[in-house]
Image (cartoon, one colour):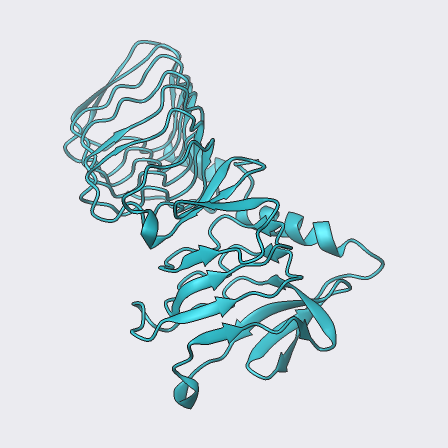
Length: 331
């Protein structure tokens, strides 16, 4: 579930609602008032909202529950993206109507206008990454059978996934979830230098600890099983105890951090390309006997790598280009 790509997740969301006799009509976009949408057999999917010039500021935006004579059932990627780079001084409440069943990845990303987002009881799917670069509080005025707000944390109770942390969560403890979804802790992590994750967490999604140069220490739970690409990209972490339950360190997971030392525990079998690249203070690494594969440029060029297992394979550039023709081949 957690290794599924963004596009695959979006298609699964759509398939849940759109499997019928005719295909989804995403290629045709309609406009009604300030809203653009495409039409499906089940209803309209919002893809854009235009609010500029003389129409600003608003205090409340109520998304219509019908467009083109059909019910609004989804909010598409980029619908509420803003040209602003910071939250505006006039707060905006966005009300998503009852009847909407899904939010695509990026539905509210960069929505700097919103201070409150009201979500419906009918919502069944909130994709990871729906609310990246958002500073809004989230409410469910009529409740929801699948999602709860727990002290500022948006949690999917079915999968015990943390999807978003609102500004009011900053002084609260992370709830006992199993999975940290993509970029879910942005607001909570503001100004933190040390983080201790709950023991309940078994997986960390993409970009959860991305671009945090002041973050120096993270204590990982002992039963953590899964890391993701870019989970800790560009942090200030110098040392990290990786649990022995980890079998794979994915590509780019710790790229551009501040490691001075790292211990690869016995149990890790796979280290992806560029996993620890750009950690220029990392001068020596000992790979445990369990390590079978080390991806191209997994460590800085000047890092001395000591292997215990003589069968450990170090991927060459040629091998990497064959394995991933679309990869980034940094030299």
